[in-house]
Image 1 (cartoon, rainbow, N blue to C red):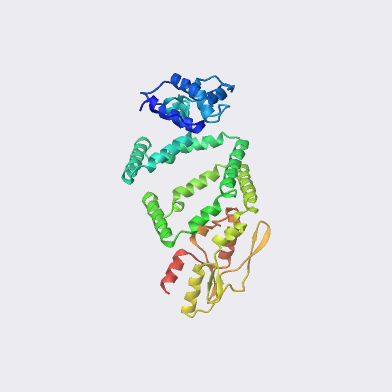
Image 2: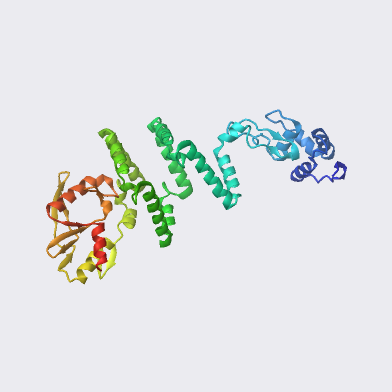
Length: 390
């Protein structure tokens, strides 16, 4: 392609931009020739360009690029990290590089992330697996774990970062999170979207997921769930033991304030969402039960003609925090009182509330009331045995 064979376009900035891009080849004219070409072939454009006073002195063709792109204030071509002007690429009239230096490029996490995502998506499945395994083996070799976030070094860094922040800085971070969630999801938190996504999954998904969690936990800790391990219980105990009463009171107060701000209640357990997802009642045989386990006990009593009453007219009294409370057992069977409770309501020998730790002490007072009145508590293994007899 020769310069003399190119036909100049009509007076149009965009067409001229394209035309100059086509001209820009190593075998073709220099920047000086291009400026001369513009002055001779496009005197109106040249005159308009020369009448402009730009805020910064730059080479002719670089300023002409800003003119073509309607950027008379020279706002384009600035580094998003430091604000310095980036290097201009004269070849094929491409404009500016995205960053002024390699140092700034490495500081732009979003650009690196998008670049990494693009490169990762272009890989084959085999190459992706190979890359992941290579990363894991490198981290394992350096730190002794498959993921850097599992190292004590990483945990200490995170802990130190938060400990060195003032309460004002923490409040600003929390507010920024809320603003982001409001902008993206229209709510302070994204719980509803997560709930909808999880609720849309079928039984096969949940069975597979739960089985995977159990197998991983069994492999690592010899328990189906990490929360059942002595290590987890000791960690929780140590965490709370190391806190002063003032720190505990402050944490409780902040939790209540945050929950009140988000949900309008001091405890999430008081919300309708909690009742919807955690207090699912079961209708059976014209009655409404608090759980499917209670239905199993009811079916057992019916099958073996037991003399029983569901939610009998029995109220047991106990005291907590200077106030009198009443408790009603689930069943009266053959003259004995029974209570159906899941294993997650117990931490060792103590009864807790897994959904609201603020009332754990009240739950234990209720538990002592059961023991005092000889109420028999049916837990996981008991229900399993009863179910086998149906």
